[in-house]
Structure formats: structure tokens, C-alpha cells
Amino acid sequence: MPEIQAESLRAPDKVKIDGNVDEWGTWQAHNTDVRVFYTLANDDKNLYLVIRSQGPYPNDKMLLGGITLIVSHSLDKKKRIKAPDNVSVTFPVIDKQKVVSVNASSDKYFYNWAGEKRTGHQAQIDSLQAVANAQADAAFKEIRVIGIKDVDTVISMYNTDGIKAAARFDNNIVLNCEMAIPLKYLGLDPANPTAFSYAVRLNGTRSNRMTITSRGPVSPAMQDMIEQMQNRIITDPNQLYMIDPKDLWSVYTLAKK
Image (cartoon, rainbow, N blue to C red; front, side, top):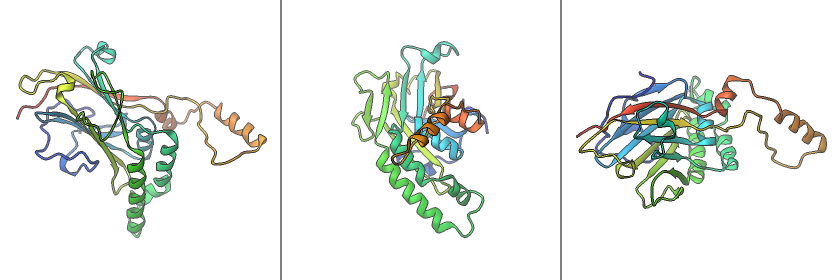
């Protein structure tokens, strides 16, 4: 499986943006740096991004900073990153407290059950999936949009602009996300397809220091210990992955019917 997708792909005839990715079939790319499987596709109305987490760390990264799809009409590798007419859509957009709540339902201990040690734990996995998705449904409410005229920067996922996004945990307790963006907002014409650049980005926490939250009052001594720990620079590779934005860039041309 390639690290990036460059091949054009028509979306299935019946697409439902609900976080269930079964209708998409085989993934088009597996990026080990960003730690995701993904597929980019289109029909005559929308550009679609479908993405699956590779495990607990990308799960958390998606929750903390969201997934951003960037579309650029520039093919220049330097200019396309900050081209003035770029369009970006980010989902989910949730506050940190809700991230803590969702993460608590997908504790890393349970990933072992959902991964290598499923035997004898199916009931627990099903229950965990149901709880995690119930909390995700309560938390995933907004989409951030940049670069589309007459569309607000932050919109409801139930908006009337036609921009759709949804995410769900599957039975392996990994996060699956779907996005659909109308081609009219991207300046793309399915009748006259031309190449454009796109990026898939996991935004991360954007802090190289520890983040520690307390569920209740703490003593002065405990507060001092927390501050000392927060000032420690993170060096663990998985934690560093969580911090910095990770993105992949490629070039795509709309697939004709």
C-alpha cells in the first residue's frame, strides 16, 4: 500500500457520512509517519476524505487537534503550503475537557482487548465501543472551515452549507472519520478536471511540555510537583508524535464518471 494516494478514485454510488467506512472497501494509502490509513475520492458533487487511525496515539491526536484536509490549486511544493486561496476543513473541533472524557472511554488497557487479545472479551469490547461512541456523539459537534467565502469559520456538523463530517470508533476501538466538501467551494470542476495539491494533517497538541490535569483540589506540595513535571521537555517518540502537526502532501485529479 502506498504512503500517499495519487490515483484518482470515484466515490461509491451511495455515500453516507456517518463515520462507518465499510462502503469504501480497500484503503488507498497507509502513511506510517502520520499513522493513518486513508482514501481520497470524488463524485460529481463532493470531494471525500476517509481516514482511519492506526492506534491509540493517532486516536488521541485526532481528538486533541482534529484532522485537517487542505486543498491547494498550487502544485509548487513550497508555495502550496501557504497559498492564499487554500481551503481547509478540520474535524472534529472539541474542547480539551471533552477530549479527556472520550479518551477515558478508550483507555489504552482496552486496546489490548480490541487488538491482540479479543478472545473472551467481546462483550467488554462491544460495551467499550458503545460508550466511546456515545461520548463521541456528544463531543463531535463542530467543523472548522478556512478559505471558503460566505461560510463561517466554525460551523455545526449539521450545517446547511453541504460540508459534512462524522467520526466513530469501530470494534477495534480505532477512530474512523469521513468528510465531504462540495466541489463548488474548492473551485474544482468535474467536467474539466485539473490537478491540485492536497494535504491530510493531524494537528496535535502544539506544545512540547507535559500537560497535566487534575480532577479536584490539590495541595501546595502537589501543585509544585505538577508544575515541575509540566516544565519537563518531552522526549518520548510517541509523545513527540502527539505534539507536532503531522501532514502528508500529494497531487490529485478528479475522477470522471
